[in-house]
Length: 324
Ligand SMILES: O=C(O)CCC(=O)C(=O)O
Ligand SMILES: [Fe+2]
Image 1 (cartoon, rainbow, N blue to C red):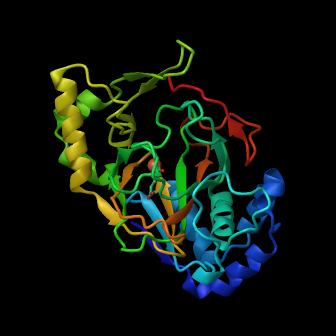
Image 2: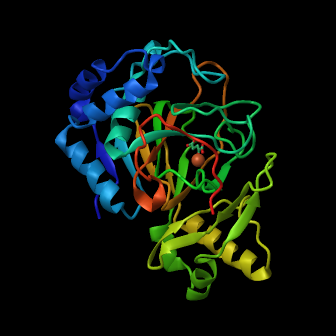
């Protein structure tokens, strides 16, 4: 199995040189910005290109790839951690945004989604993640409470293949670990009965938007029976029978048993295989002092499992399409 962490510190100058050729105000023309980032991705250092391509082709046991030591700005040169989204259209490119887009451009198409939650989440390719006192308990803006295990956009027909989390600032106390539970590690812990019960078992979820047809079908395990994809989100998987509840409890316990905390610090870029791990985040204490935890997040589509049908571009905005 390939290693799941790559030390990028040796490539610092090379990466900064690449980033410096990108348009310096990304939100002035996001399509153009992503096109440039995809071109630059061809010039990433060889070790990085190989690591990304290998992960894209075969994944790994851990279900993630972590790039460490990327060239983040010194903390006093960074803006204060945002307290609202979206950022100003004219905000200048940050190094970790550049890394996110170049690396994402190597993997596939950076994509924006209407997630089907009404106005609760803004529809954009470049998300800002920071603690917020008013956060919904299932959103990345939580801090005091654990963000429970989930698959991002498992209810969407074009669920993204990868989630990229690029860290400009870690949390003050080093507690806000991203929790990753890999199905390749968890599967051997499940009995055959549980596997059979969950494989291709359809759970339905009605979305609270005005359309009665907005019902998503979500399967906890699907794909190749010996190496399945996982879709896990207890608030979507509404168990109907005692067997459902027992099987979901077993999957939940297995994912928890193999969970690895990945503590993101400045200069880290975590690539999550959204088909093969469920993820969450440990609770932490925000200080609201302008220096709180700050991540940049994007979704990447590839041709895996029906995400692309031809003609798509990086920067596209995908309407809400419930999974069936
Ligand atoms: O903050 C993190 O590390 C993960 C956030 C997350 O999972 C989300 O926003 O969906
Ligand atoms: Fe998430």
